[in-house]
Image 1 (tube, helix red, strand yellow):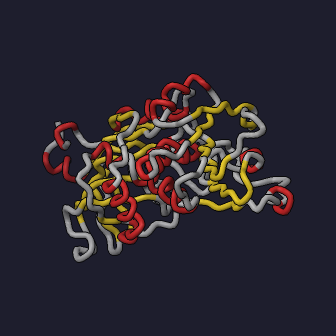
Image 2: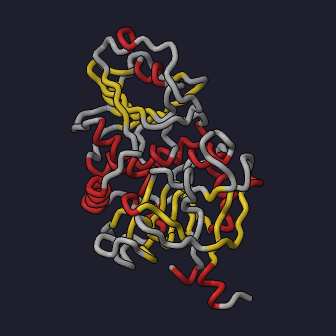
Image 3: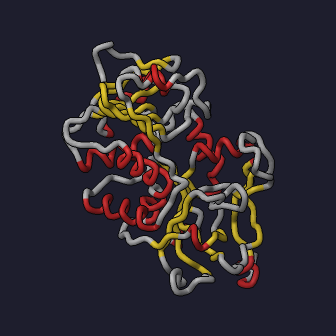
Length: 335
């Protein structure tokens, strides 16, 4: 049994010991991070699980050295602060991106040490599981919402509709514009009923990187989450003057190839993005205010404990994955 002193200096964390499959994720007691100038310790109350962390675990992030505590986002409270004026102890905060979980240990732990400029105070009355579903996923979706410049009357396609960002984007748009029809594409129509219940007007099959629909069907806006693998096909279903926002790479291809912009964009199609690596505290709070004002649903699809991190990865990798997966790393009594 651990003494109080031991409990104060150690924490539970999930390490990826080496690149590989689910078996490389190991939950163990490790030293709790110590505060240093310019960095503060955050008690992690929840974090989302992301496809990028799966890619890193599999060894597809060449810059990442193992063992590594993964995790590119979290919500929690400031435990120890090196900037008590901006980040006093006890402040509710969110953090995402930077090199969190890559160049330095991330959020798959009960505590994490983060650069002060990557820690953002937030104002919200949401419970921890809902807060944990927001930072990376809803921030990306919110940036995409702004990039697509959506008015009433748009007809929108979400390419990769069952993903966490796809569902978050759906909720953001429908909360603001309930009458806008939004179609979602999926590789497996087994998710059709869940997508319709979530709020999609139509569910379209995505087969061999081709959207299956009538040639006369077009969209004014597309949120492209499959990425370079399907961008050209998405553009082919656009109305003149439409906007495509590429904000994901679920198709496993990182770069556009054989893309002639003059020919592909000849209908004056606009191609933009939503890069969640450009994070500001103002935009994060703007997102939280939008969620509060329009009562956007933010509840996660699945909630795991830290001991279940391998199961969380397995679910997100599996064919039945849907929406956002979060992990609550503290002992049950902390919530």
